[in-house]
Image (cartoon, rainbow, N blue to C red):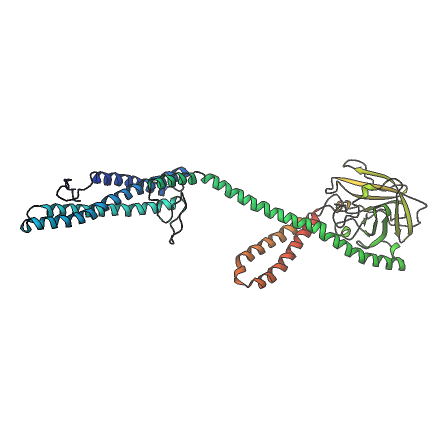
Length: 460
């Protein structure tokens, strides 16, 4: 390192060297060393907090400001010295050309120029060290250096480039501290975004399921009713309706309720599968028109909701039933809600009645809405087989747990299909991708919704 020449008066035309350059270089070197030490310590830590990142960034900005001031200081005297040297040489040459090398002015200028070159090299070395430290600070701050330059935004470091003016340094430091401070908040925002995505996916799945329950299932029942009506008329004509045992899912009777505008074919069985086609006759109960308690259950909201407005019936309203035993008229006597623990009205009785039941409230099977209608006239004479125990699933208060397993398996397959589509859709043309994945996705969604539907009680 070359010692700085003594500052001299510029009366003879020689530009003086600014005082304090060496002190500024030493101060900058000390600050840069401190920055490098803190960066090295931070690099050894597995994680650093937002406060430490803000301190490192602010210190890097401050050191950059000091280096820029040094660059401006050592650059100005060089240009001035070159111009003053030319003037001094011409002045001395005019006085005494022989004394140019003897007066010592050239030697002083050479010493000063040599020191300025040394100072410039030291400042460049400081700049190089700062660039390396700043790159590490950028990585620690979560903003890695970029190869291509980008338009700088206030408060962030881009590719190691720092603001130049002191005001810009202060503004950038303040903005960087403000940006680093809410790191925990950004983490919480990421968790909220993930939760939002989960809620969106769950909401979408629920929307698809409800669309299946309230748009698709009524179409299934309408289609089944058309076939059942044809089968019922044919069985009525050939007399096969009065034969026992009745086939599960086959037509039993035609139920008509004028006040509700209801006209449905009743099938045998109150299980999940049977009641998808229409109102179901409880196995083991009397047949409509026969002595005893004829019990019929149906959905209240899904599959067209045949018994949706069952609570609107009043005492005396007629209920018409046509079966293999003939046509019968019942009159409504009671409309009641049966809660758990109360006497069950679907059991055997010693009179001729028709009991209609569904879920209550409409969207749950917590209670049971029951309509009891008494037969007008004498019952038909018919010998039936003894009553058989009714499975719990046929009472309309519980669903089939196997449906949950089916829904989980089909849902997992659908999720895997969506993942594969998102990952590999770029390998195929768009049209081919949709043609390949959409039908399979629709089929899996259909199976998933069908499995969940089996979990619901058959009277919902």
